[in-house]
Amino acid sequence: MRSPESTSWHSASWQTRPAQQQPVYADPRALERIVAHVSRLPPIVVSWEIETLRGRLAAAQRGEAFLLQGGDCAEAFADCESDTIAKKLKILLQMSLVLLHGLKKPIIRVGRMAGQYAKPRSTDTETRGGVTLPSYRGDLVNRPEFTPEARAADPELLLRGYERAALTLNFVRALVEGGFADLHHPEYWDLGFVHQAPLKDAYQRIVSSIGDALDFFEGISGRQVHEATLVDFYASHEGLHLHYEQAQTRFLPRQNRWYNLSTHLPWIGMRTAALEGAHVEYFRGISNPIAVKVGSAMDAAWLQGLVTTLNPQNQPGRLTFIHRFGAKEVATALPKAIEAVRQTGQTVLWVCDPMHGNTETTTGGIKTRRFENILKELELAFRIHAELGSYLGGVHIELTGDDVTECTGGARGLTDQDLQRAYRSSVDPRLNHEQALELAMLIAERSQSRRAGKRAGTASA
Ligand code: PEP
Ligand code: CO
Picture 1: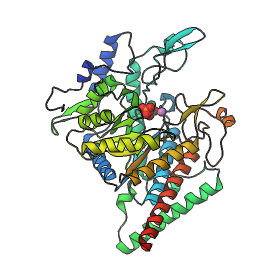
Picture 2: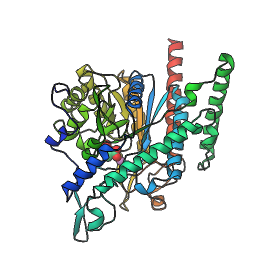
Picture 3: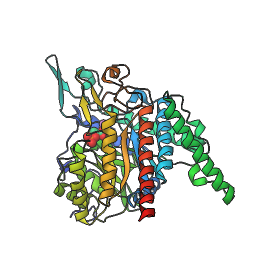
Picture 4: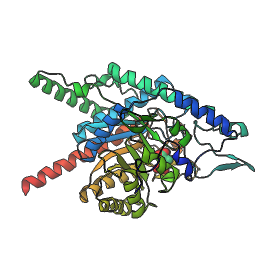
């Protein structure tokens, strides 16, 4: 077993391993200059926030909290605007309120935000009309237009991405600290966007029920509920572009440890999780809580290798497995994955991403996901974990606060024909605000009825 202490791990040691999904830069010296520049800039997050999050994820692992991780598939530099950011924060806060009410557990809120700018692609190049150019790999790397100039990997974009991540998180922190997330004032998160009356009514009922509960508790205890007042919020992104991640990785002498200070919770994508690959080498040395996307191609030995390499000390909260099998495969793949981890004698936090295994292309050639499949995978995941004595401690969702039409279904019954109307994602289809809120409602309702079922079962036993 390798551990950062026993080998000469450092923030660039990944460079000795094969690295998948990395762009090729025409001028490596320009890249080096930018990486050196970003390494000198102040960090975007700090180690004590990272440690607090690790503690909270450890609680989720014990079944005492629930993780809500959500945001865009790919953040766009052009969307680094106050309105778009505030709307995304709002929908995540609304979902978390609904989940808090339904699950009766603290919700850990983590955005796919402030750094989600690099994307893995299934092919390195794209061909149109006989012309072949590098694939678009996210705004951190190149630009989506199909021209040689736009598709050339530009190291300056690493700096632009770093700046936008900082601007985004700065704004989110200001909103959260300024009371935007105060549970006493959920009216700040207005529902102007919800057109579905039943959804709106159900949400309002939850808001007043939480308001009543706060009043009741504060009435009898004579104290304000401070913990609920300041809702904390964390950032996460796929740690894909290893030069970028390396540039923000610092050794903190006081803690005697390395941290990635570009985000609280970086994750390894499914395409870059090879045991001997550069990403696993990089991730094993940083002290952040980390996650890995798990797909059905990953067998028991692979999962066990990830557990022992990435969390050799079995530290609580350190390692999250985000499974994304798809509604069709979850019933066969998930029990095997749970059993594989169990055999290591170690624990992970299990989270379900019901988006990435359910992507399909319509007959018209549009990439979409069906709400019913997303819900089905989630329901099966909750059920399978419960049946096997495991705990599903979170969900990972691609969503936006805007009124897009990228996924079909949901209460408004979006069809394949609706997709063209407001399809804005340059990568994967996201749930719009209504669909995201509805999904949270359905998770909460199902969990309430499971609890009621259990109580009835206990009463009659
Ligand atoms: C993603 O989260 O956008 C993604 C590419 O996921 P995965 O690595 O699970 O395919
Ligand atoms: Co995606």
